[in-house]
Amino acid sequence: MAYAAYREHPSVVRSPLAPRTTQFHVLDVTVCCADALRVRRSIAACAEAGVVRCEPLLHACSTQESDAPCVRLMIRFPTARYAEVLHCLIECVPSGEIGRLVSWREHLARCGLRHGL
Image (cartoon, rainbow, N blue to C red; front, side):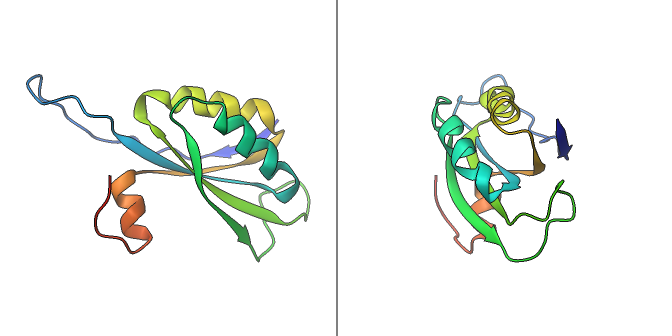
């Protein structure tokens, strides 16, 4: 198994009196194009998780084991499902790159959107 993983820990401090709302995060994952469908199907089987964007990469992926074309999948899931999503991902494809973990709001801002939940 060959994975490169980078994780940024969210620094969310909750007050015990604060209302509990589901916080979503987006994880960037880069895999070979041939593995993208398998990843999408595996993530679809995870409760409350889904691929919100599939972006073909036009440059060669130097972190992959081959020179095959790659795609970046942006996976949205509740924070509580992080371990389940990673488990599904690692189980379904032999190699890839697990990228940055960002909040749903930060993801929307990266896409040029101001609002949304």
